[in-house]
Length: 540
Ligand code: F6P
Image 1 (tube, rainbow, N blue to C red):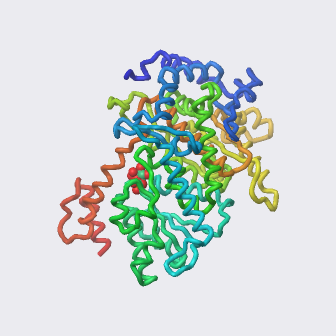
Image 2: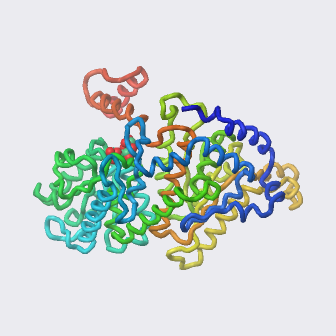
Image 3: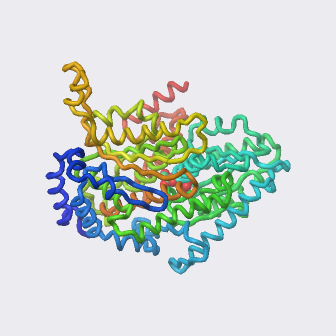
C-alpha cells in the first residue's frame, strides 16, 4: 500500500493550497456569486451548504481525484459487501446491514446477516411493545415506568444521545436514564428516587466484560434485590444486550431476555441495532424503524451519489483539506438544537475512537495528520462561551452548524431567533468585518484593531426540516460515513481501538495498591507511585 502523501493528487492539493491560502472568502464570493447555489447538496432530508469553505471548483476537483486515488469507490463497495476491512481484528464492518430493508438478503462469511438483523429487531419490537403496553411487568406485577441503560462508550453514548434527541417521541410514559461512569456518583445519583418495582435495567455491553458496566450492573442488582427482597426478581428487571451469551448467563441474566448483535458491528456504530433497546422502549418500534430508514437513505446516498454531490464524501474530504493542508487541529460541531446536546459527545467517540490512529492499516506509520478532534456545544450557549476564539482567535477551527426549520414547541416565537443566530454566526465567521467598516461606524482608532473580525473562517451549514427519528438517522449515518471517508484517505483502520486497552489493564493492576497496606508495587513509574501514596494518605 503506497502512502497517499506520495500521490500526485496530494502534491497537487498542496500546491493549490499555497495559491488559495491568501484568498479571503469575501473574494471567493465576489468572484463567483453563484457559489452558494452551486455548493449546496442534498441527501435525504439534509441540505448542506458548503459554500462558506475555503475551496473553489478546482479544490473540489482535486479533492475528488484524491478520493479516487485512495480507492474510495472500491472501499465503499468493500464495506457494504462485508469484506474484512477491519484488518487488525480481521472483521467485516457492517453497521450498514443493521438498517437493510426487510427481505433484502446479505450473505457474509456464509451467513445471511440481514435475516439475523431482522430477527433481533423483531424480538426487540415485540419486547418493547410489551413493556410499553404494560404487559411486561416487574416482579410485583407493576408496569415499567423507568428504563435504566447501564453501558459505556458505544453502549451508552448512542442510546443516550438519541433518547435525548427524540424525547418528543417518547410517548409511552416511560423515561430512560443512563449510567456509564465507574464513579459511584453516577449509579447512586441515577438510582435515587427510582421505584424498584417499576424499573427495568438494560445491561448493554458488546463484550459483557467491561469493568464499568459490570460493576454498575452488580450495584443495580443488589439495589433491586435489597428492595424487592428476592433474587428471583432479577429476571423480571434485568435484560441484556450483548454479543456474549455465555457471560450474560454467567452474570445471572436469562439469555431468553438477551438481545444479540455481532462482532461486525463496532460498539460506536451499534445503537441502530440492539444497543438501541432502551431508545426503542421509549419511542416504540415504529419510530425506531423510521430512524433506520433515515440511516438507510444516507447509506444509499453514499453508495450511489457521484462524489461531487455526495454529502459524506464532500464533508470527509473537507475534513482532510483542513487537517492536512491547513493544519487545523479540531472541528467544532454546533447543533442549534437543545435536543442535540449530547450529539458532540456522541461524535467524539464515533470520530476520535475511529480515526485517532498513527499507523496505517498495513502497520506502517502514517505520514499525514489523522483524526480531527471533535468538540462542541449547542448554540446559542456556545456563542456566549467559546465563539470569541472562533471569531478572533489565532487558530483555524472549521465548524459544522446544524439547524432545523421546525421546532416541537415554540410558545413565544423563540425558534426563529435561534435560527437567526445560527445564520448570523456562519455569516460573521465567513465575512467578518474590516477595520475600515469599524472605523466608519465611529469606533475610536485605538479600539478598531480589537473589533476587527477577520472572517475567512470556514463552516458547513446543515439544515433539515425537523428533528424526527428519520432525520436523526440521516445525521448519524452522515457522520459515520464522514469518518469512513477520512479513514480511507488516510489509509487507516477506522474500526479498531487498541489505544484504549493499555489504560484498562494498568487500572486493574493499580487498583489493589490503592487500598493495600503494602507499598505500591504495581505502580509503573515513580510519579504514579508517589500519587498512589498520596491518595492513600488523603483517604486516610
Ligand atoms: O474502551 C472502549 C470500548 O471498547 C468502546 O469501543 C466500546 O464502545 C466501549 O468500550 C464499551 O464496550 P462494551 O460494549 O463491550 O462494554
